Image (cartoon, rainbow, N blue to C red; front, side):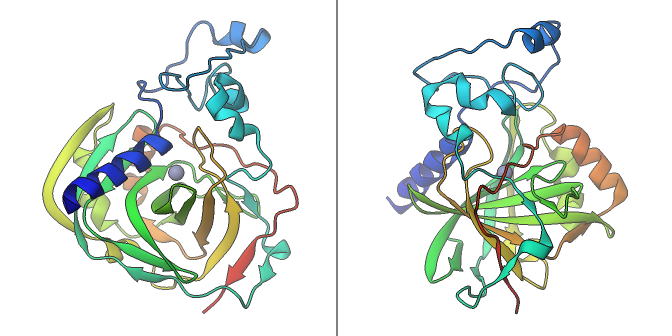
Length: 274
Ligand SMILES: [Zn+2]
């Protein structure tokens, strides 16, 4: 029963974030025509709507118009954002993140938009007094958030859920450096196109995090359709490392799957320092 519930939870989180299972983006001959005359399809049902990162018709600028359920993509509290460090507010209300992660089995999926590790088992992060359950983590290249206007080569998102209307995502940047042990283990098996790779091995999730867990905090959204504004964002200040070759190889699989930054619209970014 427990397992059933956790599978359902994972599926709900999964479908919320990834409501489209189309194949990887391909530039079409129609792209030029679409730029000149962008079509606006008002489909009520978002279920089979295809969205993308690079095509004028189905790309980020037009997500909000693809169907009614994606209208949040045009909202005022969207993610990602640029974090301008000179505007960040020191906050005494914020607390250190308590990671209660263990060793977990994972399923690795390429859903056409990202490479995602679905996490089994009970892994919690205590975020400002609430226990959020880790559902999955996935990757973007380049990074979605920028810091002082600068992208990092890769950003990983650890997606947590407290309730249907309360998600928390912890974002961690990558810099070029030492070989990344997780990539070393799995990069050759990552599905390069839509598909799934099942692993019997367990991953020590804590080993994926930087030592220092200071963070930037703000209220935002899912960075993929339906772009629901239900996410507390924790962007860690300290990066993790991967080698130049690993970054190159992974970036080729991820294929620029980042949403451009959106305006803060009066939101404040706060910071927690240990
Ligand atoms: Zn993401």
